[in-house]
Every structure is written in C-alpha cells, then in structure tokens.
Image 1: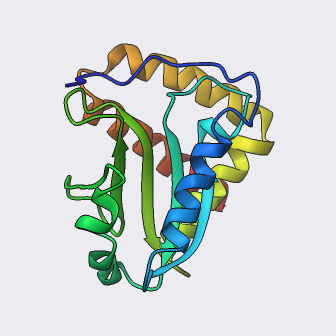
Image 2: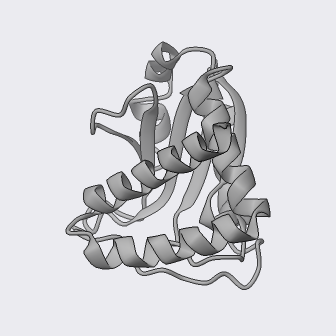
Length: 173
C-alpha cells in the first residue's frame, strides 16, 4: 500500500491522460439514473505547465450530495472506483485504483453540488493554474516542497487543500 504520494511526472502533451478522463466521463454520464450533471477534467494531468502525480482529477457536479449513494456500491466498484471516507467537508471523494493490493490511484473524483461555492472555488483554482504564470510557478514550488515534507498521502493532500483555500481567498478580493 502506498504511504507517500506517487512520484511527480512532467507531461509532454495534454493528451497523455485525456483518454482516461474521457473514459471516466462517459462512464459517469451514461450510468442508468445517473445523478451526474457535469464532468470536468481538472488538475495536473490536464496540462503540461507543472509537474504532477499521474492521477486524473475529475470534478463532478451533482444536484445534491445525497444523490451519490446511487453512484456508490457496485455500479462504480466494477470499475475499481471506490468512495474515500476521510471526513471531507461538502464534497465526496472517490478514487479509481490500479489494483486493490498497492492501492495506487489512477483517478480521483471530486464530487460537489451544482451552484455551490465549492464548485466555483474548484473552477477558480483550475483557471488560475491554467492561465496565471505566477500562480503556476508558485504552485509547482509548493508541490515539490510539500512532497518532501509530507509523512503520508493524507498529509500531502491536506497541505495542498490548505494552499488551494489560501489561493481562492487571495483571489476573491
């Protein structure tokens, strides 16, 4: 089982992970009685401007987080996608695993409610990390330092979440 984040990679093309994203997008949209409203490819595997973990981040919007139970269980488990239970606030996290022995993640689903502040925060961060050169450089430096300081994946992810929250607060003004 992985204890630390996967090593960073530098993508040569934004198409490197596009097929994996499109596969997940099609799965979510075409599920019977799907609660999914929208699906966005976000994060490092969408771009080539900074190093990233080889994990496809997918932002999923639903009308209500209570609707997620219809995604849970067998419908997504058949595709090695499982709910992560870490006490996330106002969102549901799911991960697709390469296998159930190493627990190496290949994709992460960030599920939020439509028209929710968290959705707009995600989209703000995504826009800044796509278009703002200073933010991109700062984020890459932060990620490298956070990886060295982290004692676990959970610690690393908590550091990133805090950095994103500070970024959003800074750009709300």
